[in-house]
Image (cartoon, rainbow, N blue to C red; front, side, top):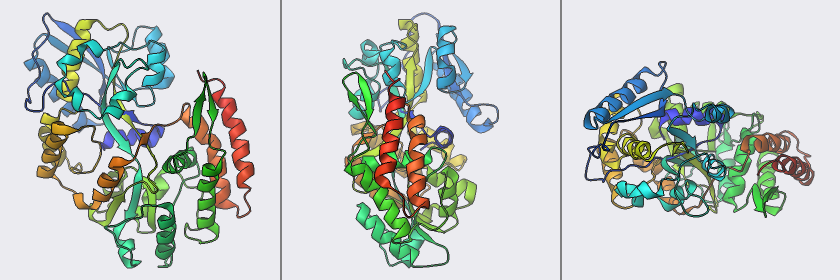
Length: 451
């Protein structure tokens, strides 16, 4: 996944996204400009502190405007900020075309705060090659389309190939079930020298985030709609299974180490230092391990989500202001088609990434099917600078696993579930039933205000 997206995910612990090109895979040039001059405001311009990415954005903008002389891009810094969105919308300051996370479209569509674009999709030949489940994120219950996906991510099992080899495990065949994870964790921990076989979060909302991912892997849900209302759905056998597995790995197997109350950066640091065998992560964690902590891509593997009944996913994309005119929507589609995830432009973008030492060949993002997917894969293969085979178990295994988005008001729910996660990892006598019952009451109170 693109590193800038990973940074926002790390900070917000939500991510949503994909993008939609409006040109055919066989054509790397922007579509012809709309009749008559039009200026559109867009966000997503990298700040001056990200000089290299900002220059590429502005170079792309200049190239696009040269090919489309009747379209001018008025680019603004920033991305989706739920805290300021309503104010910008009410004050008429919201861009014509703006960035969103996967968790945003449903609410924006319901509140009629975005424009429908279904009638303009005939200008986007590659739209039919975007994964249907991703287009669904940007569609209303009536099937009409309101936005375009750009990038996606899903969680899998990140592991140390070196520790797998030392423990007698096959680094090309990572665990596929939670029982296999538990068995592998015991063997890795037996290596000694302060190595933990498996790690998990339990602080700063990351515990609730991972509880959600693990529950999804068993086919469970955090919250479900009951008529017009949401209600908690984790206080059941599957929720108990998640906490029981972690409790037993921590206290019976002693395969998670004594250091707990971990948050986002902790597991990345432990993996980079060679002290952790496995943890749940997205593929872009690898970039942080390599760039920030001097790791080596060759030392790590990425496997599918254990048990494989679901995986927590997300991404980002773009939507149009409800007040955008048809001319601005058409112009915006042309910009998206040129700048964001145009499969035919993948090789061009990869050349930029290679020059700036960004990874090429990680399994995600990949929003495409059909010819578009093959175009992207060919471009990635040509300039791959990471050991693609290390991530093949994830690419193959997660391909058939349903992707589930975060629950509504995710961060508030995660904060509640942190308590259950931290308790089972710090108290051998933790009352799992009581923890889930208390969390259920709190989450239902939070959900009562969600439309």
